Image 1 (cartoon, helix red, strand yellow):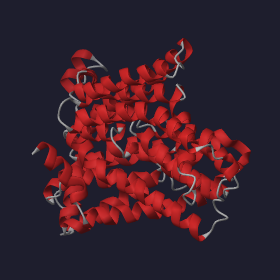
Image 2 (tube, helix red, strand yellow):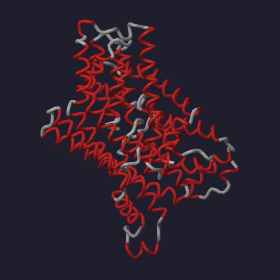
Image 3 (spheres, rainbow, N blue to C red):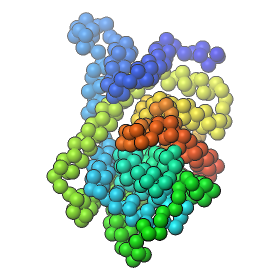
Image 4 (cartoon, rainbow, N blue to C red):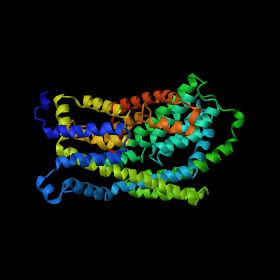
Length: 457
């Protein structure tokens, strides 16, 4: 316990602040307002000034000024502008029926592959992930489109559930990802370089999922029976449907990601192009109407507001935590262990993996990742590589019980047709694929560092 010798009372209060926050979140209280409440309570202690209290009264404390300043600084952050634009793009693509067209075209085009419906589902999820970083939207939509199609064709329910939930989680890994925009702000990194760093690992994980599905369906055809030949249209119609469904969306994705990775536009500018392109697609497919547009605006505003309040609360929470010196406890503890960089990475990833059971990615990225970031620099680890490793790790938080949100999204749209136990079991093989992907990324770190260096250095 030599590391604790120089820890002050204020430092321990900072640790209590984080501990109490986790406990209250587990009770089910809203995260954003819990962060603000914890900021006010512990900030009042940290910034208490008896003289100011005597002159002004209860509101004579700097914590209130801090929260106001953090609210303004959050709204002035130009990187966060990309969030509502990417959200709007995703909601328009979802509600315009574009994903349904894409899935139906790909499922027919891949009919010769073992587990063709599952492969089509994963490919569609990967493509849809580039239009929206919202896991709930992808899992819900594919749960309505792909899951019934697979089950009606004789697919094993566990297998089909694992495909939908795992594929839907790709939305937080494959750029442009909302999670990486949040991580970029928290870690003060370039979102453009972060997107470039995530590209190859994201595609790698999607590829591992597809390989697993093909191998599993080949070894056990009962998991995923082949479609009947009578259901397959003529080849000319397959090509036509694929071009009409895939090409317009593909062009928008290339335009958005190409402008980002090519350094031609910021994340916000590319997001604006994507939002306009999504509206254009809706008009092209003649699915645009006022109700769809209104719903997309409402959902975008609701999700964006939640994220903004999270940033206001988290920045205030982090400021108080830093003022109390809570970070000193973590720094002193880890440095006392005399770890090698790879050991530090293993420990932090295990902690994040465990935190993923009760907490969502927003809580982990906004509250706990900043605690590790100073240590990342201390151990000489590339912060972009560290962020991609976390992005892979957080895939498991949506798949592993008891708080596997992807499982609950699928259960919510399919009800009694599938049990949570079946969904959980279906997700286990994909969790092992994620862990294998993390192993590959650690041993071949160029997967996350080569592309940003090539494009931007």
